[in-house]
Image (tube, rainbow, N blue to C red; front, side):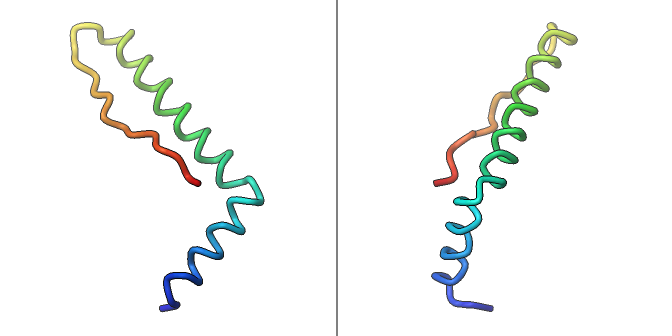
Length: 57
């Protein structure tokens, strides 16, 4: 196992490439759309909104 700062350095490099940010945004859109779909399809049921979107930087 590497020291923590090595992983953070790699994480920052990967964020700068942009692929991780786009994938994260896509996942958040998917969860948002899924929630809306479930709310519309099953209006009598409670649909949790406990996903915290947060940020990557």
